[in-house]
Amino acid sequence: MPVSGLIFNIQKFSIHDGPGIRTVVFFKGCPLSCSWCSNPESRDGQSCREARWYTPEETLKICLEDRLFYEETAGALPLSSPEYSGGGVTLSGGDALSQPQFALELLRTLRKEKIHTAIETSGYASREVFEEVSGAADLLLFDIKHYDNRRHTEGTGVSNDLILSNLKNAVARNKNVLARLPVIPGFSNSAEDARGFASLLESMKLKRVQLLPFHQFGEKKYELLGLPYTMKSVKQLHPEDLEEFRQVFLKQGIDCFL
Ligand code: SF4
Image (cartoon, rainbow, N blue to C red):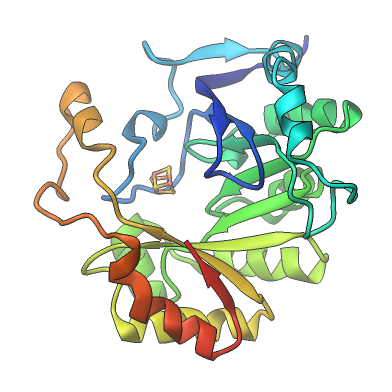
């Protein structure tokens, strides 16, 4: 029996989830519960109106429809190179690690077709799952919600111990890692937060980071799903709001972009 994955969206022509033009496969399921989550429909791993089961082959077929667009943005570099600027497929969610067997099968199937792959993850998974799935992807888009364990637990419902340990492990294995920081007003947007994140990245020898400014794109979904939304009155952040925050990283020699 081929393993199937519960997917709630397959989005084409994305330019925000890894290099180049990409197809993003959104997995159901996430072990965190961030109050700012813009995909609340993804969080439980249950089947629902938005989601359906896909086999890896079926998902591959959809991804292959846009192969031309992935290649259009690709250079002559190998897929695993950090400088690779071409497109491909990103497994997101939810969390790509929440359905590890399907993620693994899909990544292997895509690799056979020489399509660049990325996984978007918070890194909260057992070491075994993390190593196996991340080992099959060309790029890890690794979201760090907070460097401070207490704040991390308050904001996401889980400790960051396992997450940071997996991040360290990915760096030690020479994986191509792009650290990403969701910048959330009142949670992770102060100058002190920027300094804390910068020293964490420095201690892990991570030389580049992407900032993800808080937005309200998910607001309507909470209404539709009948879920409480506590971030309603929080203002969205724009690139100009993050300039000072960004400078903290640049001053420490970390390439920081939005
Ligand atoms: S880790 Fe991402 S998908 Fe999971 S709850 Fe937080 S924001 Fe939502």
